[in-house]
Length: 284
Image (tube, rainbow, N blue to C red; front, side, top):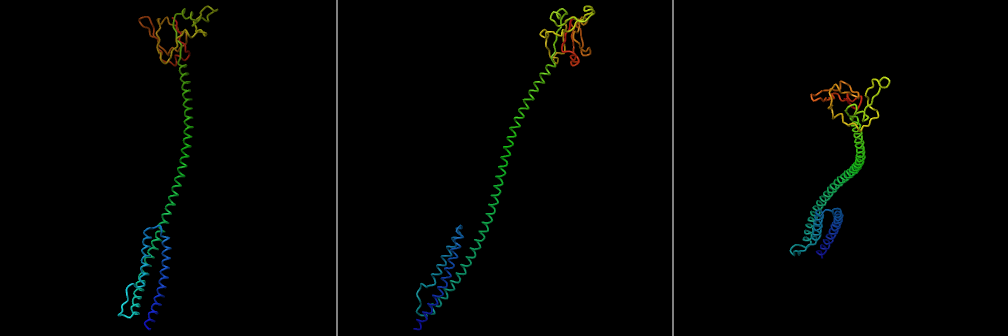
């Protein structure tokens, strides 16, 4: 009867301690479940958590001994010894689990810090990307404006080129006209018949009359020349028979008579020679 009472007491104590540690195990399991939800993104952490759960379940199952009791040792002493051993084992396992829990908490906190740091970097990169997009947009707008300006400038340049070309043509035309002269030589009779020269002046209208250029002459009887290209003229007469109908500065030309009876007119200063008249009319 006494032994039975001892068994009841031990069973009661075992039950109480068992309930206490079962409650602690359940509470730890809830904490681990909460931690599992927070560490669901990490496979390695989840594996560690599963290992902890398995250890807890194994420890909880080991409270009740599976082997048979000895008959040589009092039952109460055997149960007390086994209970004490199991409590020590559970305490050691609980301490080990607490270490693992703290380690996981530290790793989780460190992981959160890393994630926060990465989030900050990503946010900074997003800002850089947005700034780059803004700069690209401004650059594209600037390029469009420059293209429009280039088109306007190209049109302006084209217009200026056309104007310059027109001015060049005008200048060339005026230059050519400025360098155009008309030339003819012949006897007095030939030039009068062509209406190039006429008699004018003199006393009483007939004495001392001289040959002058007809203001109404027809240019088709004269040869058009470019004074820049023709500096010499050959005259079929001797120097003493030559008469200049048009006025030219004597110092702007020279006359050289040849042995064949012809005379060569050399224009030494074209600008002075053609200053007074763009006509060269000579009779002999």
